[in-house]
Image 1 (tube, one colour):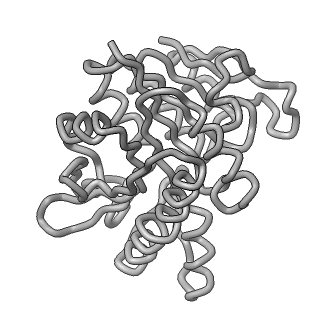
Image 2 (cartoon, rainbow, N blue to C red; image 1 turned 60 degrees about the vertical axis):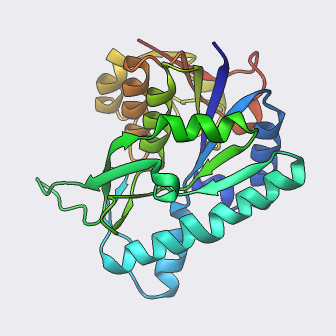
Length: 258
């Protein structure tokens, strides 16, 4: 079974040219099939503020009204996605930038209103595995932004961590998948101000306890919950790490296990 690396990088890395270059250079160094998923929340927040629109978040997830959806599409599918693709082409990775609407790869539905109305937030319903396999088979590396669609003409803002987990789970039967969640630290830290407090291994049964203890909060909670789903869906390895460690299996990182 061929290996497949699925790497998710956050918007914080994209907002710094040096960090972005380092992350994408590490992604380029991966051998074989690979897919990149990126966020862009920081850049979207900056544009919202410039336009006088107050970003609205709940438990690390964006509440997306009409105006915010337009900004998300402009930033995620436009500026951020094409910057990433062009930089990967510079390094020598033949990348293709995609949203979930392109080739109908990721279909979603608007999240039902329960305690919170998330607006135009999308919950993933299906992944077109055959289309992804075809793209990978001709030597292209897909670069997905955090935009999906419902096949009824409506674009949806979908958490990039969720997209990464959904792609990994859908492709786990076809490839030996290693899912990488990358951000500014070397792994999950007990103390955000102490890089030496990294937790080397986390069982998915410990996620709620770590959340209750305040170690997991904000955007890290959906990241770990999605990682748990990926493992349950047959993904071979899930790691949380600094992007420079993506191509180095010996580097320090947090491993998630069942």
